[in-house]
Length: 229
Picture 1 (cartoon, rainbow, N blue to C red):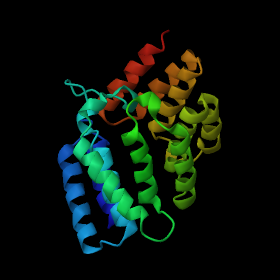
Picture 2 (tube, helix red, strand yellow; picture 1 turned 90 degrees about the horizontal axis):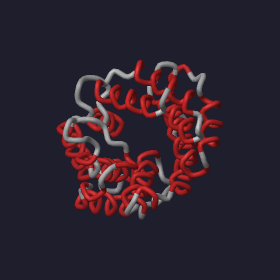
Picture 3 (spheres, rainbow, N blue to C red; picture 1 turned 180 degrees about the horizontal axis):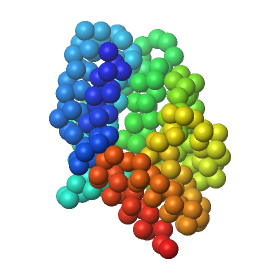
């Protein structure tokens, strides 16, 4: 049930197809269902973790898009637009989850990652080494190519783009990522930060060709254009 609720939330947070980048009504419904599950099982740590995770991620919804609906990446978001009430709720719920016995599961670990972003007053203040450590644990708890991809992003931010490129090389042949736009998008970002703009441009264009969301596709093409000729 937790997985289904989170799938609903994710489709609202980052729509897989269509003209809209986000679908806030789906996020709100998923959060409502999450609160119901917490009420039914108040001592279930993963239920609390999921509720905390959704509140923390939902706190950024208003800052994720520009007035024209285009995407604003996390480092460039106006953090004054983040919902402080949702952040406080999410952090309090995560504290409740962490007080319960047993090792943290996938939702608690993802909530811990979201909490690192929520606590950072600026993008530069983000504790990326802590996020990388959380992703190391998350990959052990939930081994999947997508988690491994996100771990590579975290390591690239914590330890440099070459670190991220090395981790991508370990997973780039995974069948689940063969047509997954975030893979070339991540590689493009690492290459751009490494000063390899021509290679980065090709990766952003590849990612745009794989995306089924119009807003995401426009964002990736802008990133490609920023790499020059």
